[in-house]
Length: 381
Image (cartoon, rainbow, N blue to C red; front, side, top):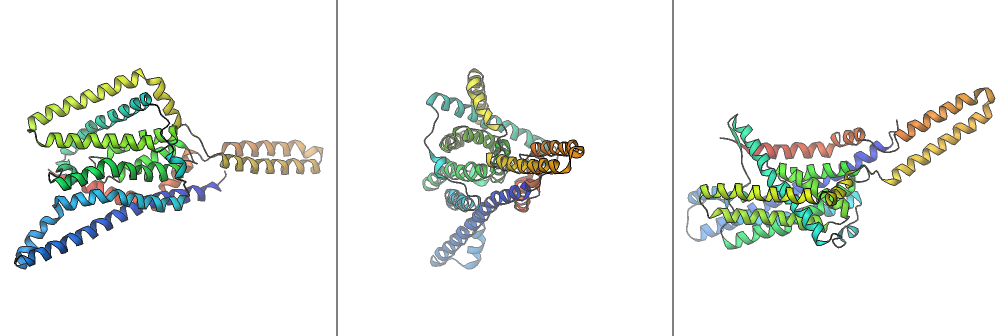
């Protein structure tokens, strides 16, 4: 068994997971800095207006739910993702320039793929309802993040949230997850890279309302990125999905609950059915995208292992020539055995890749921290 690949795989996984940890660290730092600034401005303005400290402290508890503070956090979060991506690029040596070539898809194929992924997004809402129903059996419920539960009605806050979700997040998150993480792990197989980057993409949302859908969409966007070799299709589709979600939130916010339920079901079913029909009709075109998930190890790894195999083969044959005719068949058997063993291990297999993934220290820390955030999104009924 060739074990020389283990350190390299684990090193790449550590670096990719490290970018994810940096993103979480940057988000926490951003939240702390904004909270401190907001608190200082609030206290100074309250004192200047003549309020006593007891009243100020009592009202300061509401600061965490200040719509403008939440909007600023949502708006600036994509910049933290870009910063983490830049650090991740230096750690993993991924080159950005080739990933920003123009969208290679024509309009019709792009529309089909975008609609199919939008259908996945709408279908995932029923998966969330299922999770919520199962949790209700033990008197628990899934709670959405504050910026989704109560979309700001203030014009400035609304613009900031919309800009952060519809423009900033698609651009920054695709650079980090489909740009850095996916392409850092791609040498060890397309499927491995797509699944890991999608898992991380789901985890960074930090709540069970968004996590399942984000994971499924992350897989789809990873496939699109590998097929097109460009980040732009994934960025645009991501933006379309987020914009649709924001528009529906604002559309439903001014309606009665009974009307919301009817419209929600009608829109969801319509989009899912339309996406399903379009996917079936254009299955041959979409099937080509799925070929990107085939295992494609880095050629340099295969070439390196092949060179090692040839060198060792030659050494065995040379020994056989010096050992006499009686030992020739035995040495030839050794050469054949080594060749088969080397060929079977010429590329890192699933077991080795996933073993290195689950035993990576940065992956374990990231999974623990983000799992805590997911658990925190579950509240008692």
